[in-house]
Image 1: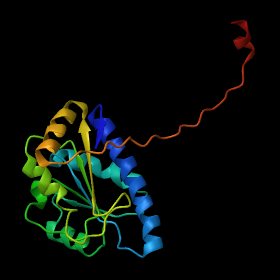
Image 2 (image 1 turned 90 degrees about the vertical axis):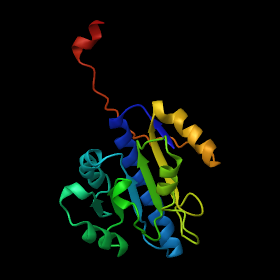
Image 3 (image 1 turned 60 degrees about the horizontal axis):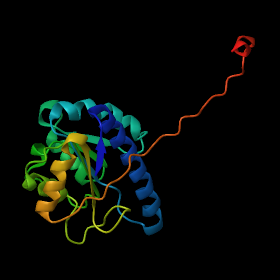
Length: 193
């Protein structure tokens, strides 16, 4: 899990972690001839998911295609599901309700952004997308990876949820970005201080 301060920070953290994990997965895949990555990102509602489409596409630099399984977007959901199942897209944006009852084999990564923490069954439903028997996982271990991005006020609730479900979270640090520092030459006016 990653605990963040606010919603804007959460989307930034999500894009950086996703890009890094997909880069690592692609390197591993070259060495092992493994399957392509298959990522499902869950959002709490359709509005937040829709607002995230552009930033996520930009973060993936055109290297991974994004599909959107959101009933109100007007895009054919059957077409989106088929594209994802046939590996024509590698990243699917969804809400928990939009995938309920659907099976997508070989999902390697699940990301959740600000999902409700009160219902253990909901978490199991989402996490179970990567928990299929015999499934190839992410680069971080066997099986798939579930990464939950939480607001700081929800961190305690997720601890209770984990305890209730009998597991512990591994905290992940957000990936920082090095910002180049530019050195500006001193002007004659700077000498007066």
